[in-house]
Length: 122
Image (cartoon, rainbow, N blue to C red):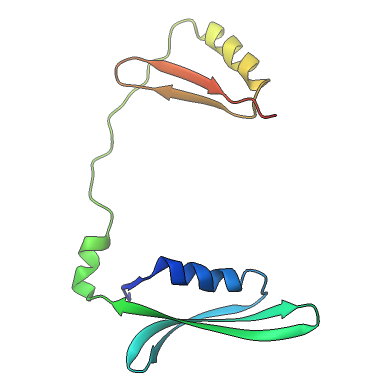
């Protein structure tokens, strides 16, 4: 595992230059004794083929810093949802909402609030 920090603006610019390319390479290299992420691609414009190279400076992090970049250890949430006894009524409402939208979103809170939402796409 190699951990590094990179400027997102420079990375985004490099990736944008290769979005129309069929072949791109990403390499970890050293330029002028500094670590870089080298993005190489071949851009095609009409009958012209151009090789594009971006050297993005990075900061190599210690492997001991890996612990600071892992997701936090959290216990699973303990939330249970008991639907109303009149599920036939709710089924009818959801079926009507499904005619308005491809998705019906259901949100519930621990205070007992249940929200059904459908967004009408024009």
